[in-house]
Amino acid sequence: MKFINLLLEQIDELYPFPEIAHRVLELSKKTDSKMSEIANVIQYDPMITADIIRMSNSAYFGISRKVETLKDAISVLGLDRIINLVLMKCGSKNLKGPQPGYDLAEGSLWKKSASAAIIAEKIAKEKNPEFKSRVFTAALLRDIGKVVLGQYVANKKEKIQFLIEQSSFSFDEAEKKVFGIDQGELSTLVVKKWGFPDEMVLIVKNSFNPKGGAKFQMESDIVYFAHNICLMLGFGVGSDGLAYRFDENVMKRLNFQHKTIEKMMAEFTDSIKDLEELIESV
Amino acid sequence: MDKKGRLSSATNLINSIKIENQNFYGYYERIGLIIHGGAKVKIVVGVADMKSSNKNGDEIITYSLGSCIGVAVFDPLVKVAGLLHFMLPESDLDLEKAKKNPFMFADTGIPRLFRELYKYGGKKQRMKVVIVGGAQILDQKGFFNIGKRNYMAVKKMFFRNNVFCDYEDVGGNINRTVTIRVDTGEVIIKTSGQGEKII
Image (cartoon, rainbow over all chains, first blue to last red):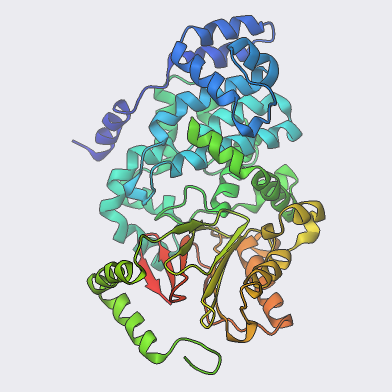
């Protein structure tokens, strides 16, 4: 069997992205969707409802009174945040485990994915609030390809390391050379297989190698940048290290100076302890 | 120990044996537990954080340094250790944040780290100082290279304040986890996929 077919079979072994997340995302895009409609979809799943209520009481949100019902949670946190919590809950299952191939301990890849999603959403709020939900979801799912490729990376780590050290490859360029496919292409395949709309597939795909003039360029640029911030912070960094390409053109397109990056890192780290507690509780 | 109170060559020899022979190192660890008569306490330093201890057997650790820098400091005479994990070079980025959390920046975090050790009777002149981290993403240049700028900020602070660095493991595109042992002042640098070294 060709290696690529083997990988495609591995995608089927991932936990499927729950239907509830797709329905919530679909409803959130419709301008005429009522809050009660989304609440009904969430309430249909009592496990997720209970988790959302529990997460709403996290110190990260700083709510003084106790949230006891979903209605409460929506009115206090707002619909956007509740949707994000649903997505985090649904996305965490595949990303939370250890990834020994990349030398990542349990929770490490998840911390990076969730942090990148939160950073991406913050950037979108400033750049174009309409992109908030898209970039949050794309940033959350961007590293899913690592879950599929991880077990094979371990066996080829010397070869990959050689390509990085001797031929100046980036980690994903070395993956492509060794396996014929890289983590970004695999993430794109997973997102497509999970039935996300074409725009989401394209954002995830281009967030690994953002190109000027591409469709949904700003969204891809934001997701790319958010993941780079996490790399700098050392989140979800394993045997791949920081061996990925930094594209200054993305900074120019987003009109970001170096101070912007530093401010974002400082802003994000400000509430890191509460945020870590929230991420771990998902 | 030498005049500065640094570790003797015998200790250095033991350290080199430990690097070469992990089994011996494991044995030493177990003996260490007996000598200190109790379980070791692992103190975790988060991002933009600092911890210190003078309790025999304690270990201070910070995980996964990307472009951030870990500064590990140890006074062998009074046996006190500190570890700072700072994130950015200069506090003028946001003075309010620096006031709230000085450990976020090199220029406010480093003085606080040393002052913390002075409280235990530590003296700058005899301190073992190790800096670790400051990695960069490929093609990250100029002002965007925060890892390099963090490193420059530490060097500047050390130069101005006559602090001599005993060992540095900085740059590249690898992430590093660093531990300092309070009883010996040993600094353990673990790099993903490349094992660990003891300084």
